Image 1 (tube, helix red, strand yellow):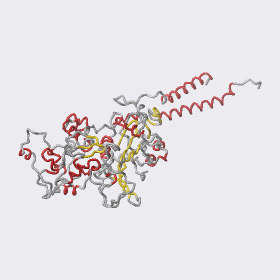
Image 2: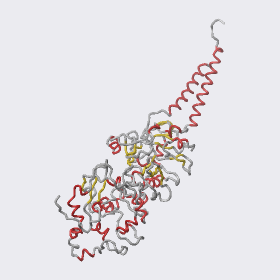
Image 3: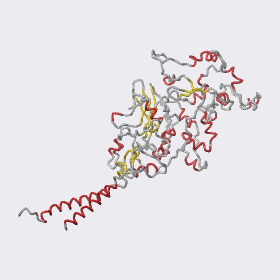
Length: 302
Length: 246
């Protein structure tokens, strides 16, 4: 050999290249076969899966605006009262089918005490500021003798407290009603006030003369907050509701066959109003415009 | 086989091979398959739960089941009731049977509260990391999803999740979980659980938008995360959480 390379001397290199080529082709084929289309498009997953996640389910909860398209009056009432923050479909279930059929398809209308107690049954774990009851105690308190009577005989679920007042314009109360955050009325609760107890802001702290005046009247056993309903919105603000339409008073004072003998005095409505000659000419007249003496003086010097 | 031909063939084959590889590495197109112009890179979704507002009505669980067709026996979201007695002994229960209603329970309670639970849509989600087939992933807008065409139902993700939010669907035998109602949020709606919460205990929002309610709440810094020591960087922020909850 004279240092000249013969053609055959490269044969092992060709073989190596052929093997490499086969490997690359094989790997490419295996990848094409095993890796689904669009895999790796956005990341280490199938890109097309994102589109399926968006489209394979259709929204069934349509929202209050859709409900208001047909039930405007109902929604408007609902937005004024204590349930303003409760979305329609929380009680009525998803409204898609009902809305698409323009009301022809039925929507859930929850019935029985359970429909209310799902939120309002008294539970130790429920925040103290949330209204909650033992319904038998409540029936006893308001003088309902017949236990088969439904909550809805007195409380319209869309306006449960008949507050003739838009929640959005109700007066903002400067104090935070926090007592019930700790004091939830449990039997084992200590009555001794600890040294580090925060300052107490009872209603009388600012409204002393009114509270004093109230103590001597027929409603003395009723709490201030039973009528002046306090809505806690967040850590620092709350709204206090004062005005109510006559049905608010009727929550306790409606004459009904299901009431017990020791119930608060019941009246026939609207017969009572006609009898007193204030109906319908004076339709805006409120109960307390005649019955002020039963609650507290409207003007008490502070 | 001559030298010239062999090189040409080699180039052809290599060209074809690399072409196949290149198919997978093109520029990122916008999110496909949608009728609305939703830009998934403009959002990063987060979630917050104010435990002081939860009343344990389970409306969220009912809505989730109706919206996402979740079968009985498994949950995408649920509410835990904690009852802690004077000796710091903790009892936890959930109401995921029948009407999903919490019943009163007798017994001494020093403090009690509800804690809603849901997928934390972790930024460094363990469930996606352990998936052997790339069926679990996080979308660009921060939602951990499952690809039902890829999942082989091995259950690694179910075991890996530190929060117990995944399950194997008894009908399909595939992993499933909360999608943050991806079909809703990409249409500008809120997740069903948020849309049905009567007290505003559940909040959903865009972490990329400094003006969103969620960002505003989180800026105050008064929140806690579940099991932060796991390094999963969860995106479900808890407000007013009791010290017993981890």
